Length: 65
Image (cartoon, rainbow, N blue to C red; front, side, top):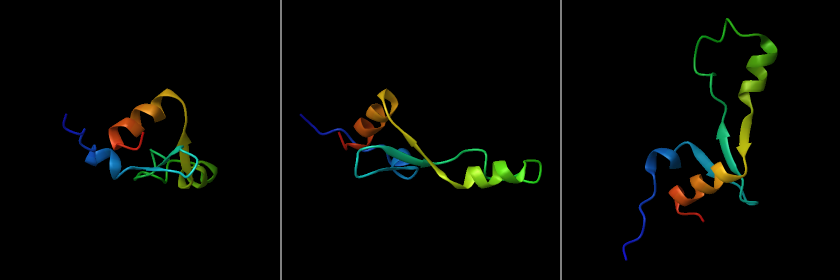
């Protein structure tokens, strides 16, 4: 059987951590930042992590599972 191909768009956007969590950049921080509060802007700079069923799907698409 042929192997599953890696989802290249997803590969550019997420990273699998050493413990197996999915790390990604926060959304809503691309532009139009002047309308958002300073606290919100600082919070958006941080990266987020995913666990559970969604992260399992992502790992399958990346070929990491």
